[in-house]
Length: 121
Image (cartoon, rainbow, N blue to C red; front, side, top):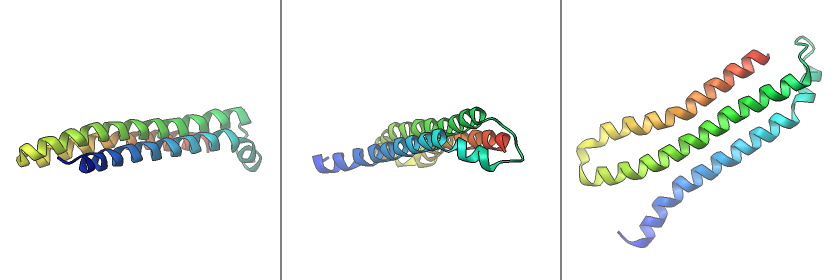
């Protein structure tokens, strides 16, 4: 395999992991900066700003960390799947299931975040 193709195969998982890290950092910053404004606007729920801060921070961390973990899992599993697929094309269905399970980690994090935010509202 030429060196240029190998570098392009490694660039995509790295780019996706960096994107997930940037999104996780932005969500965490939003969780730390937004609670005072949200607490003032939410007159019906009389939660203190500290509760809003911790709730939004935990939702951001659940989504961000699960996205990072899913990106890492898909990067490792994807490279192994491409190698196995090159040797044995019959494994396509099984490898697709494994990649889907690794991607499910991010979906679980989003579900947990929705549950946390639902509890705050």
